[in-house]
Image 1 (cartoon, one colour):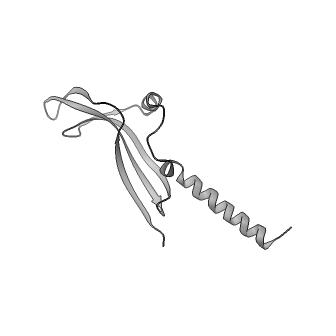
Image 2 (cartoon, rainbow, N blue to C red; image 1 turned 90 degrees about the vertical axis):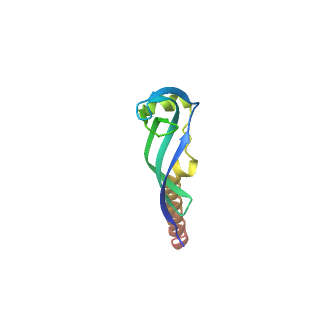
Image 3 (tube, rainbow, N blue to C red; image 1 turned 30 degrees about the horizontal axis):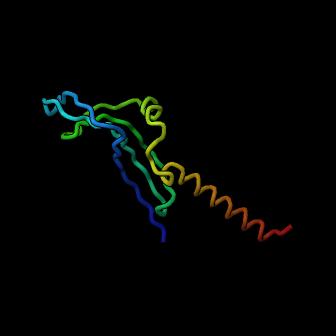
Length: 109
């Protein structure tokens, strides 16, 4: 049985900063976040199809987009799990190995 799905996750990537929120009309904590959307095949092989860094109000989630390159350089590594970042490549490699093994079995030597 195969399971196919998709989802969205929000990960806090740094300490909160205090800014004035135009929607709440007060000073609030703004949290730097990574928001990404992903697809999964059989819960092991995933891929990320939308990724953005943002600075969001802790109360109303209003905020600003942040530059991806600047944030990733500051963080040092992307906080997305391995199976979601490289899962599609692993699935393709497994399928290619399976095809090669089947061919080698059917046509020895």
